[in-house]
Length: 494
Image (cartoon, rainbow, N blue to C red; front, top):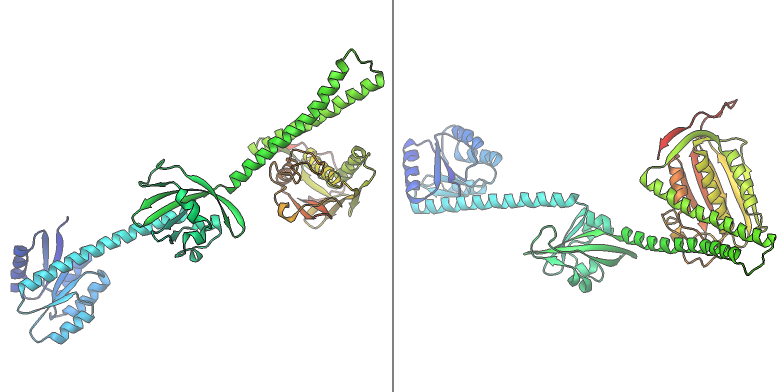
């Protein structure tokens, strides 16, 4: 341990010579500085953080009481002992009220003085240790404030005593509503599942494996990966939110099942048609052969679309997709798409596909092929999800800065809870194909990402059982009186 530093302040030169010797004879590990005036003492106090200060209460220029006030400003918390003369009890009381640690009356009782000085030095060192621990705790707390993992402390009584901002962000529970409450009230079911959470006795990487558990908080199910470390004051738990990862795993499972179905059905039709054509024991006329070949062609095209969707989604995710930026007439494009989709769905006599233009021409900047793909997908979905027929309307509405292309149907509609999820990768409104609508679940994800990369947005409004409206909104570009040939395509990063 470092030597204790003590400062003696007195205008009596004889006392400054005798008192240090007496202290050094009775105390080990101590270093003593002296000052003959309060002003000299203040210079030393500014330079050195003393463990204790001993000063006479009566000195010329600045007395001990005034020096005590200055010490409190410069070195707050430094214990100060005041030496008083006989009959100066009122000054001594005033000094204690002013923050003095103790007072010693003259003539000095050396045993009492040494005992008081030792207590003062010990108290100062304890104060410093407390300050160091407080600063360390504040530093650790600041670190916990900025970590991405949720962190909470459960004391031996089962009460939550720490709840960092990440824990609040993940669970939606503010610290003020959590601290001091039972962990079982904060995380419902904690009393049952808490004991199953792995708890290490020593902190460190790999000290224990986290366990993933579900919790229902305010009606929401969240999956948390939790592990803990035991301390004297309780158990500190750290957790990560794996809700999205689990949801993605479920969607991937649904995607695999859906793609398997989407591949197996056309492959079965192709295989069956090909096998029939190869059989020598069946006499097929030209009409029957042509019908089987058409099945092979149609189902092969269906397979090609599934593969194209998967490849395009992968290119969007990886950033490899390059879009061409051209000035194009979206009104004309929408009109062409509607004409094409009328032909595609000519067998749906119960569905009418209409286009409404507020202006003859509306120009945007984008990739014509990809924007055509978006509109085809939206119109195709509108027809497919209208099993009872109705009207599918494509409406072009420009304003001062943007143009919106809305596709409205009178079909099945989308439940409110699913309207934000339908743009997710692999997500399908009808995963069990109960309503006879197939698909990979990638179409709307691809549409949203393509529109976003053309500085636009894709939104939906819907009422279940009444139909849906999908809106593509893109920035307008200026109209020119005479349209020159389209400029060369300029690749834009995805």
